[in-house]
Length: 224
Picture 1 (cartoon, rainbow, N blue to C red):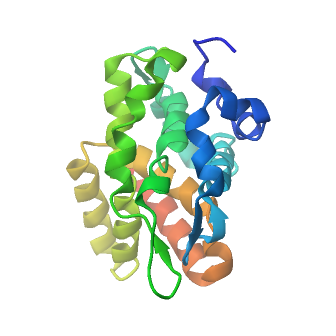
Picture 2 (cartoon, rainbow, N blue to C red):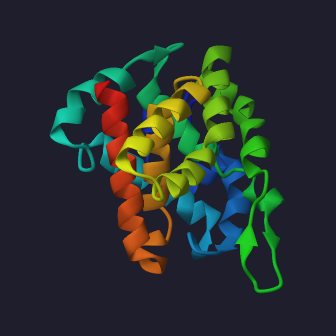
């Protein structure tokens, strides 16, 4: 495997191959890190990471994108940060976003797990992939910021579900500005993250509502 592995090659199919763990040994501890909560029904973090990548690929393939959004999002995701497109850097975001959960995993007396602070811990590890993916510092900083913030959209979606449409519009615009205009990337990530979990089984109605609101917010951000 070349030390200059292209991010476009970082796919769900690749992560499922035995050679992926050889090239990315950071994934190995995630194979035995099991989460048990509403979003993860005894799901390993490794399998979740692959499932989130599948969700991201569905998004890229326009399976989950409204027709009116496709041109805007395509142009946006083709923008370059360093030598890589935002689209390809989102693949690195998926790879790294839960990379510290094996360190942060805690279990309460009922057996429910959580991973407090895993976002900050994982963000610190983006630089570990610099040489393998041929990254420059601007790319590392961009992905690290997304990793650091990727848990927040879940909280904002929970808030949004309690609000009126007008209030939701205000919230997503403030969220975008508050995250340094990274709202589109974070909404795409949370969309893929929801698809990659077990929400559909544990809370099907809330699952559908979250995805719908996420798509509405993406529409607002992309078209405004």
